Image (cartoon, rainbow, N blue to C red; front, side, top):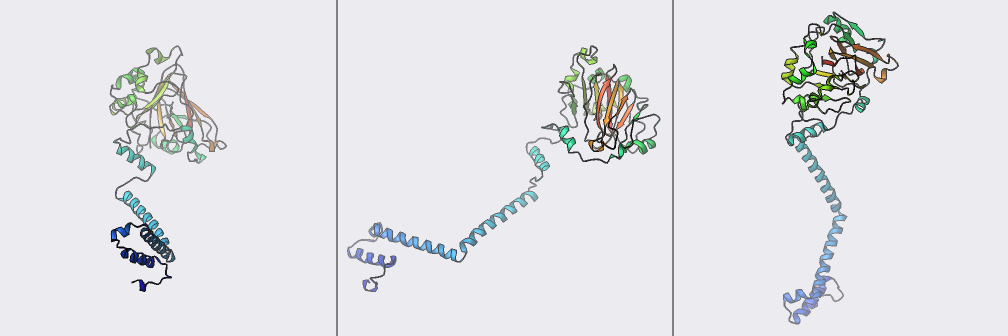
Length: 356
Ligand SMILES: O=C(O)CCC(=O)C(=O)O
């Protein structure tokens, strides 16, 4: 065995064979050999050599590089597949609106019944409003006041042109002027009405400059304050009526304005504004889609209208009109910036709605 080994050869295999021959000559057994340091070193250097060789080999053949690329490619593919699977088979939301809806459903909330977390910031939203063509206000120097308006003339001149109008006999034959009052509204809302807390679907409440948080608080106001006879604490609020039973009561006292085209429909939601002289709504523009009408049931309200900024050079900059009891103003509040102020001595009560 020794004769077969070349004495100049220093490879681990040859060194191992030499050591093994010596150890067996000394009478050592296999497990004792394995514990000798020189055997361990030899074994380690062999392992090291083999793994280094393997690595060099892999690199030489591009194997390592390929395997890293393959791994990344495979991971990306798997990720894409997982995303597609989630979107198409598990209906996982992808847009902002879907994410919100998904989150609400996940938490068992009704997305259409929860109040907004943040109020729409009017000044910001009106900046991002798309610009309008100024034809609607060009050559307009005043607001028409008309009576006996036929639906066809209304449709031709005012309904969808953006030209505001006051129909002076708009509320003729209504019983609302003799019926609507602070006490009347307070009496028709049941204690459990969603409108009182303003928390139901389609319930909105505008406190304007007052401290009231909702309609319930308004109805609890000190009776002395209702008329504000001493002018010490004026108030003005508005709300959308989201209570169907109240809507049925209100409709007994007013009807769809006689001049609206037959084909046009008023929104099912009435808007009511009520308050003392001295207060009103600040200058703003709406984003509700449709034009609206508003009937002055009691009191007097002065409206100030301004064209949008892009029309300042083409249109008159300020139009004003006072709407008297029994009159109806028709206005596209989506294009006209508008503010109001109750004037005269009486409590102002209006009811209105959008129409299409
Ligand atoms: O009637 C009011 O005082 C304000 C009405 C208003 O701002 C609106 O309808 O957008």
